[in-house]
Image (cartoon, rainbow, N blue to C red):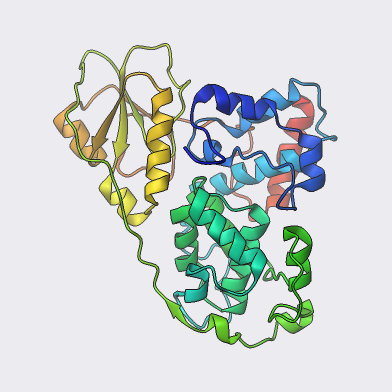
Length: 366
């Protein structure tokens, strides 16, 4: 489909098998590091964090050897847990300070900020639907803490383009950078960006100490802002056939698991809800990626409409779906997602608190 992300299930499993968790831990902060490129498949529910971890541990690794890798998987689970307890459209811990606008800098949208490491990352995002995690932090820092834009609107822009767009991970991360979900704001200066993106810029508006950045005025290239207006592409509605004698399994943007009830006869429906995609819009590239991943699920049919309209028209009973906070009005049998551990399900205000609980479970597993 694109230069990085295949969509057939066998290739996805091969990607897991190729992961080197030790190299990942040593190099993941660099844009050429041993990153896994698994996040789009995890976000779309094709594979799970638990599945990935189990495959890695079966190779004989111990948790101590690959703690950095394991923590990144747990960060994803942690954000999902936060999303179960908090309205992520609002500040999680406190209000973002020093906000001057509720838009996004025009030069961010155009990838013309003048900071090469960031501009290159935005161009890659537009081309492939992927941005390295460090570059996401750099971009959010530039937008929220230097341009002083409120986190919410720019986070929607990034989510729109990301193939691994996950509302919880994306929103919590933007709030963390902006100081709305952390004790302090995150800043990245030119030296830091140069180091991890292999650029060699000097005398830019980010070529400052961190102490200077905390009090600097917004530089001229970031003053002009505008609203990001997403274009929404959804597949056309089509006629589907339902066998009322069989169970109905509902798939959506966050659940495309080809192993879910795989050997059980049933109606398999990809639910495309216009209201959902209106509230959480994604690009055509993301929609096409979702549809391509659906080909891993035999017998999948696409329904365009709300959950209520589907059940009113076709079937009202014997419906199954996976839990997700963004499910709109789902009714039937709710099944849990596949967590690294089911025993740590409460809300933690910090990842450290969550990790200390999960760590105990993992060492037993290892």
